[in-house]
Image (cartoon, rainbow over all chains, first blue to last red; front, side, top):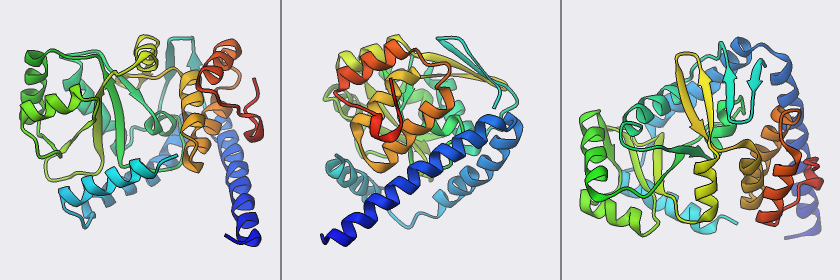
Length: 72
Length: 199
C-alpha cells in the first residue's frame, strides 16, 4: 500500500470517529422518542432489506465463516 | 436521551422499538423460558442509538444439559424459527459443546439471525454474571455490562468495533465506573486514549 493510500485511510478513520462523537452527542441531547424514531427508520430499512439477500443459507454461512477468520 | 442508569439496570423510556428490537425480544421470550442469557457485541450499541445495521445478534447462555437444549430446540421450531446450520438437534448441541455458535432465524429469512453460544471461558462467565437489565417500553432484555463491552470492542479492533466502543463510551461516560472500565481494559490488554476513551 502506498503512503498516500495509507494516509487517506487514517484520515477517513479519524473522520468516522469524529462523526460517532458528534452523533452520540446528538442522541444524548435528543428525547428518546425522537432519536429512536430516526434511528428506527434506518434499522427497519436494513431489516426489510435482509429479506432480499440473494444468497442461499449455505452461501451465507460460508460468508460469515470467512468474515470471522479475517477478523483481527 | 433520557436514560436512568443504576449499575445493573438501565431504563430507556419511550424508545421506539425497531423491527430488530422486536426480533430480539420475540426470540428471548422463548429463550428465557429455558435459560438465563446475555446479549453481547454490536446489538448493545445499536440498542442505545448507534446508527448502523447488523446481520446477527450474539447471545451467550450457560452450558445447557441435553434435555434442556432439546426443549429449547423444539420451542424455537414451534415458535416459527429455524436453524441455519444444516445439523439436526444432536449436531447443533455438539457444535455448542465445541464452542461454536449456532444460528437461528425466522423461517425463510436468515438475516437478521441470532448467534447463540455457550459461555466458554472466564470472561464469558463474568459477562453473564454481571449482565445488566435494560427496561424498554413493554419489555426487558439483559445485556453485557457497558464497561466490559467497551473493552471487548476495543480488543476486537476493527473500525466498526472501535466506533461501537466509542459510541457506548460517549453515551454512558457520566455513568460508567472508571475503576471497572480500567480493570476491563487492562484484562483485555487494550487502551482507548487514541480514540478519546480515557480512564
